[in-house]
Image (cartoon, rainbow, N blue to C red; front, side, top):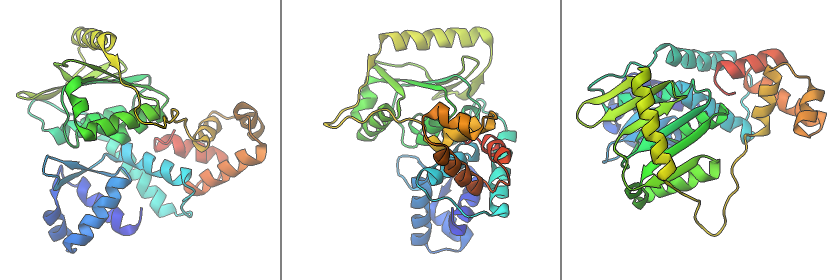
Length: 310
């Protein structure tokens, strides 16, 4: 991101939510400049709108947002020039986010819940399941960076929505995007709990009156997982609509190359695994080394894992 966008993103990270005018005053920028930069951050998946009025914003956690940003640059051929300071700040932000943990508890508001969800999802190994009773603007259930992180880590993403959610145009657009990305989505009449279950090992349950809480008790997790599976089994599959169905998105080759690189495979072995030429693999490796400011192939793979890119 450019210097102005990075400054605004760092300011957003300093507290839970900001109104546009508050950001303008804090940064001493014109309001239209703040809005323009916020729009850019939202497009990149670094910021999210909160609340129904759409004039309050929050930062998407670095452990989710920054790997997605780097992956986007690599996919689009916008590989940044080597810059030790910038990549160092990138890694520092990511590590700081990971150290903060997941401390949601009773009374936490929606934005605190989103932060907790994002920090947990950055560690997923096998699967994430959402139970979604209603649509909420800026809610964690409708976050593209969250889904992107789950799929990038090679995990399965499932979501069960109440049928009423699909009546909201914004939710329907998100449903179409989910199916394009290869995520699994089903709908049922009603979904009583609002929850996220990660690897069947931890969950976040949100109650409108009591707030959010992180669940780790084996007995409660077992009950919640059983409820989720019943909803899933009863649900109707939500399929992509429109005249031109889009095939499920595969992980970009550059990210697969980095993963295999981190596993210690040679260029020849990676080329054979992916069915491409050795020159193609070497070009991907060179681009990754530049993007990650790495001095060696090994360092590129290690840094990609360090920042959550793979």
